[in-house]
Image (cartoon, rainbow, N blue to C red; front, side, top):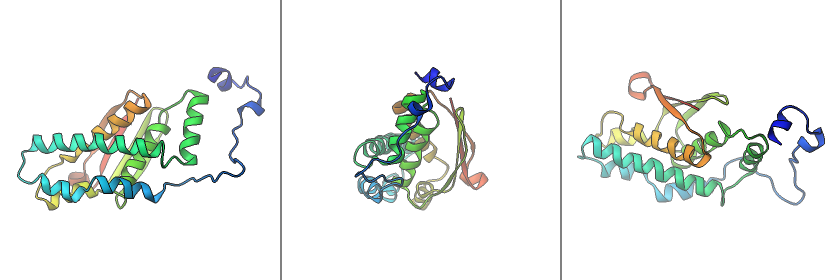
Length: 194
């Protein structure tokens, strides 16, 4: 069906998706409760203070586990309690076309950032079926670590682990490169490709 659809062999009436469902509200934005639920379970500032005095490898391992846990909770919440119309449509389009990346992956990444670090400044600068480029210019995680006296960029482990957890859920085999770093370039830039 997906191949026939791509080739235009399916009648147009069978290719159109209904965007309205009578009697059912259709939300196209993230629910503020997502932030409340995630930040109630994970507090970046408290975590950063708990890492004071630990060696770099321990900090990185802890942040890697946190990245996995935050993404797993995000996925659980946005696929059930906070499933919105955007999520429904992304899943429907993926089912109909067979194309998962970047939309499913990107949705989880964006919502996990919003959920844990709602005040971060970030932007998706490229989004194709081969690559997503994410830039983060203000990061609550990095700031909390610096304030706790933890230098370097151990939070890279957090980001990479969250990307891997999202890709595991979507079934995408990703390669992630960190092309810029906040301390050196004024932003972290991740290029995620399939």
